[in-house]
Length: 138
Image (cartoon, rainbow, N blue to C red; front, side, top):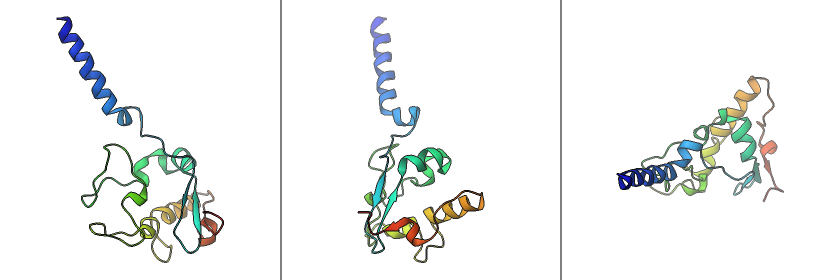
């Protein structure tokens, strides 16, 4: 009987360990990330601020679910944009890195669309190129 309880406890512990990001919230990303590669300059992205104060505190707001073109490397753990999106889209991916953030004219896309919505709600979010892209961000 004790062996059965021990086996169940071990299985429960392993299940909890494997599913910890789902049970206790997603793994935390870095506080700040500098997105480089744009000729206009890098973008200093405050991941901690965006993930706690913006985006309804949901990782999925920016980190879309795994796509068939490039499944998640680790279950329940968002990947970096550059894990899938590259400067020039490489098959099987269809979306290049810049397009993962906004369209070529910066009128729509993950970042700019959210910033426009934030501004409509009375908050202040950057919507002009030079408000995000800065040469000194490397």
